[in-house]
Length: 353
Ligand SMILES: NC(=O)c1ccc[n+]([C@@H]2O[C@H](COP(=O)([O-])OP(=O)(O)OC[C@H]3O[C@@H](n4cnc5c(N)ncnc54)[C@H](OP(=O)(O)O)[C@@H]3O)[C@@H](O)[C@H]2O)c1
Image (tube, rainbow, N blue to C red; front, top):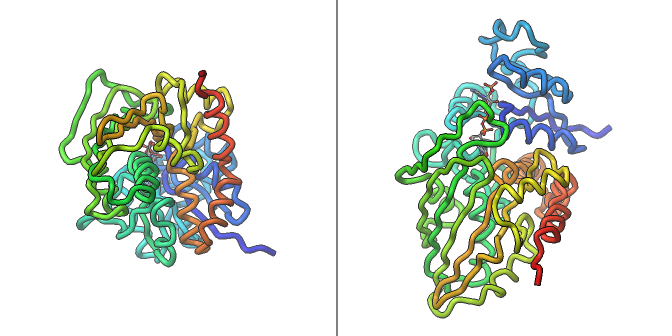
């Protein structure tokens, strides 16, 4: 009989609920259960989807009205890997208090850090850039949605043009909240913050010398992030068609010509019954690509919730099975059908003339 690896998903919010839902269909994996911290409707949702719900030992009392399988502490005693999907910063606490004492393998999400005293790992994962580096690691951080999206653009460009590129300037226009975070008010303002983490996070896997200049603002929408990027070349910039050609066969990058906004893309995902209304990828808005003198301007939207879920699956395979990239990629594709989704998106938003 095949021995399945036992996996626990600690946190069942936007990211944890998606990880659990997809990973449960992986034939090599048994999802032992999910961790909940607040006694709310999501406990019943998780149970109705077939997940055993575990809660912290010290909160058992407040979950008296719910069907609970046991405590997170004991669930983790018989587990091969935990996906930490807690709110940013809690992953580090969980590492210290739960995973390290139990010598558990763990994957952390983009709200954590790989820098300083609260670092959860020395590796920030991006399957396109550093897949094999996760082999043999016990703790790895999955890059955030924005950080993952940027890597999907930078890595192919660097492979093609190398040091002909002298500068990347990117403005991240970040969504305020996720679709299902209905309790989170979307405030009518545009916010900014000094030193957004995204630049340093990208440099942690693309190299600290990459000439990346990044600014970020947050705007009142739930419908994806949008990145506006200018790529400066040493000499004349390539034509837009040459740039788009590079991404034609890139996994998890769709090239769309006629989308007018992020909601239109997500609405299409919904009509196609993509799980969670996610596309699981970034979408280059090809009609917005321009080349002037030494600079190429591109714009792409980034499915904030969906993009990191197949990445988590790739990372899990690197850590648990040390699977060769091509094989891992195939397993992930079997669960997420990203090629099919890319084709559907590209056909729907195809160039009209
Ligand atoms: N949302 C996105 O688009 C997105 C994209 C990429 C990366 N990320 C990253 O993914 C992580 C999770 O974000 P999210 O958006 O999924 O957050 P979320 O929707 O707020 O969900 C967080 C979940 O963590 C649970 N939780 C609370 N305390 C916990 C603890 N001590 N340990 C473990 N879990 C705990 C919460 O449980 P209760 O509800 O029961 O209290 C909730 O289910 C963050 O690092 C975030 O930066 C988010």
